[in-house]
Image 1 (tube, rainbow over the protein chains, first blue to last red):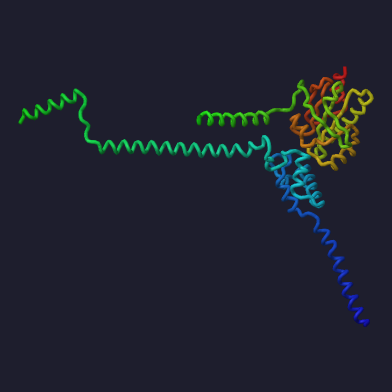
Image 2 (tube, each protein chain N blue to C red):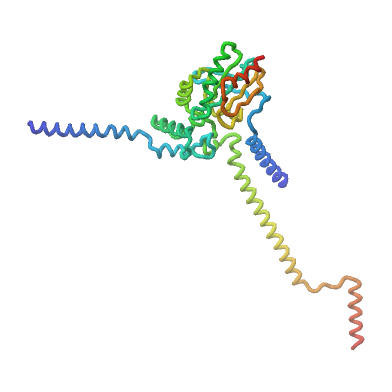
Length: 171
Length: 169
């Protein structure tokens, strides 16, 4: 019986030891990793250092911002919540892509319109070019097939009559 | 019809690009111009609207806790604020540009700044003044026009007084 208790005590101690060892590990797991922080940071831009994403920016301001991302992630905020927070604090300029509203739509629409206009111009130009080539080909072919034109010019008629008369006179 | 649409579209596109270029090339709000209207909510929760402050000289200082060149002028600005406080004719407002609140509050505590300071939410105030960096300070006269633009830090307490005093006569 004593042996049985000892055996149970041993198992309980082992469980307790595992719990003690595991709790800090779990606590550490809740800390956001650098990769998690950078995954959000690379989608944000600090207005102070333009055109440098937050994950690669080395200024003190950017370091502070990455600290905020880490804090918010640790508090359980989602990526969208963090991005919204930054926009509310620092404006739309912090986003890699401008939000799709109001004047910002131009950034999305204008390149597409320009591309569509370019393609349309190419298609129109190509069609015109083909049409011209076709007309030229038709003209050329019809010129080959047609019998020699009857002289319509009075002068030519006279010349031909003269030549005819001469050739007959020679005979 | 097609040609009109094509040319109209092209002109519209050029107008948009020209507008964007014009805006990006604009410098700061200049001396003599009316100061842009803005509302600042301070870290302690008070609200300051520039149009409500007509009749006072307003000193708008843009700063940030990460800005090393802001530090030398911080104490001079506070000293100037204290100097004019009894007159009630001058108001100092600190606009904290692209900063984080804990660091900003620590900065204010470090330099014992007591005049109203608040965050530049959505960077709307700095965009309205079209600042190019920090520190920048706009001294607005009693009629709401910009009387002085300081790019970079003030070099001394006397320099600040030298700019504000003539506006009080």
